Amino acid sequence: MSRGFFVTLEGPEGAGKTTQLARLEARLRAAGRAVTVTREPGGTPLGTRVREVVLDPAVDIEPLGEFLLYSASRAQLVREVLRPALERSETVLCDRYADSSLAYQGAGRGLRLPLLRQITDEVTGGLSPDLTVLLDLDPALGLERAARRGQPDRLERADLDFHRRVRQGFLDLARAEPQRFLVLDATRSADDLEAEIWAAVSGKLAGGSSPAAP
Ligand SMILES: Nc1ncnc2c1ncn2[C@@H]1O[C@H](COP(=O)(O)OP(=O)(O)OP(=O)(O)O)[C@@H](O)[C@H]1O
Ligand SMILES: [Mg+2]
Image (cartoon, rainbow, N blue to C red; front, side, top):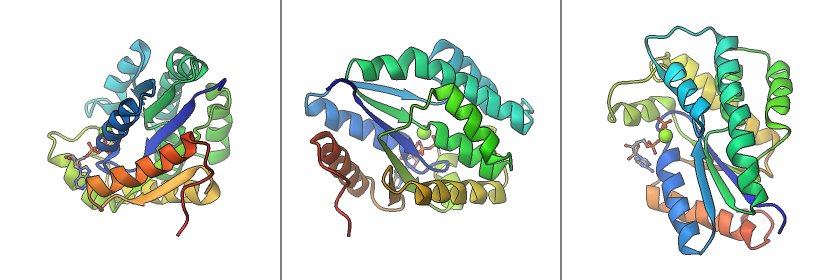
């Protein structure tokens, strides 16, 4: 195999992305796979600085600037982490990626999607996930889950209508690319979700086509 396998986890605040990412990583390692795990924004020294800024409730950021900050982090991550790991034929797991920008800054903040897509294509060099797991849930429930973790970050403080648009944005992206997305009801138990994600990932890694359709 000349190229690894690229999986992203997406979804609203508190959907369980980080929880499922850790479980998937453990399953892959147990199966003997080389795995690189990273996240957006973050994953590089630049990305970590960007993360501090974009999540800081004390910093006001207008929408296009917000998108460009995420894009700066993404550009660095693609070149420093994602592409090298994929070239080593590793399985790469990323906690949020370009779909989050389309959902949050596009559907959520109302920036024009064609512009965001054009910049994103440039930033990623066209690197698109082989599989995107969308953990979907009512944002009110997700924010409640996230709130149990502590003080809300800048995005978690945005109003519920914003988070509803984000959720719908993710669902629209999934509908447009059904072969890439696995959409799961994030109110199911973490164990159930883990099993279903593993079935999809292990099936694809084994060379199977898409996960079993109902
Ligand atoms: N399937 C589940 N059912 C109930 N609670 C869950 C489930 N999965 C995760 N949780 C809990 O919900 C909270 C948020 O989970 P997690 O941090 O994995 O979400 P996230 O999508 O990464 O959130 P964020 O967008 O804030 O990074 C945690 O307290 C976690 O234990
Ligand atoms: Mg998380």
